[in-house]
Length: 322
Image (cartoon, rainbow, N blue to C red; front, side, top):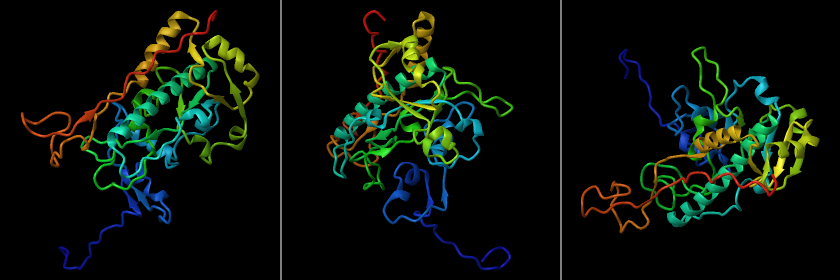
């Protein structure tokens, strides 16, 4: 009974209707066959707290159509994106018994491809004055600071791999956005190129006139900003330019100072220093709660680690004579 003598009941809320951050944004449990529609989503921990704003939480909500306060102009610009066919490496299913070491290997290959796609799109977006719709981002391993088996954390042994990553799992998310001012407004990004979430075009607030105005284009390899602008000039009126096989198309800016600034800023954006992948495989049956990466004291068993991600690849060489 309560302090006033009245009876009350306690009950456990069903996880299928009241989802936490992992079950919703990582496991995507609400998309399983027969899953009921969620009633609430708990914005639990994530990996992209900037010094002025919780960018990772906002981005997760945007990715799922749950962030409802973006202004109309967010949906009414001009954009560039990568074709779905080449946005990711060929998809590989990772079964429940996959060795974490194999899953991490492909996860890092996908990460390298992703950074090359995004860097090319950022260069093209800057050259054309367009915002970038980020490519689909697939994760072949979960992101956790503790040991995992089969690249899954305890309690999520049957989750599907790969899954659509939250941006904060794979990118230095705050660096893609501007700082927030004291009056609550968001500043321009350091690079001067805004980004949109991968499923941006599925948002019902995107006007049909924008969503349906798509020009598909193929570019040669090793083009600078002036050549990119010239090649895509026939599509200037389109709201969306979709580039086929974008990796290797953009080699930099003709102006040396602009090129150095772009290379430095995008290296910062695409360098992600994160917690190593800590795995139970290869640990010689280390007991639970053993330390990751190194023994707690000499002779202790520990869970081995793989470090990632690597720094982004250099910009590709410009084609001869360019």
